[in-house]
Length: 125
Image (cartoon, rainbow, N blue to C red; front, side, top):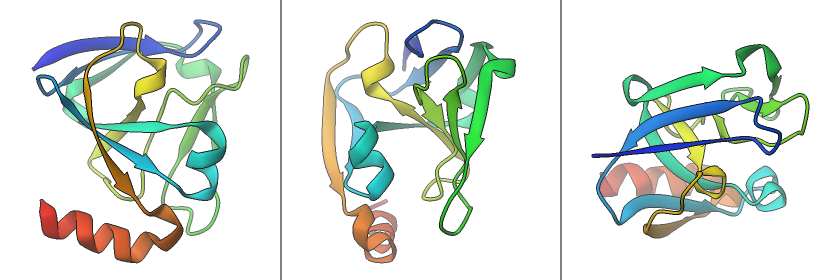
């Protein structure tokens, strides 16, 4: 495992997390919100994540099924991590918000066909 740190643009929200050795598995989702925000998913079990600062700066947005909780900085609007519907025991970290880039192994996730993509993801796990 390696430790990464990151956060939002203004610095109010900061996190640290342990991720697998490089290349770090990542998902590139084409759903409506991920494609619009440029979110590149690195899944981290809740126990391997620490919100260092910014709990009071976070705002929440939910849509569709309401199962995912999209958290973003109320100051700058950046979503550096959130609770995904696809991985209820993990946080999804935005690799684009890491302080230092890490080597990624990127798989595509067809979020526009969420049920089929989740079934394929579960089958490969």
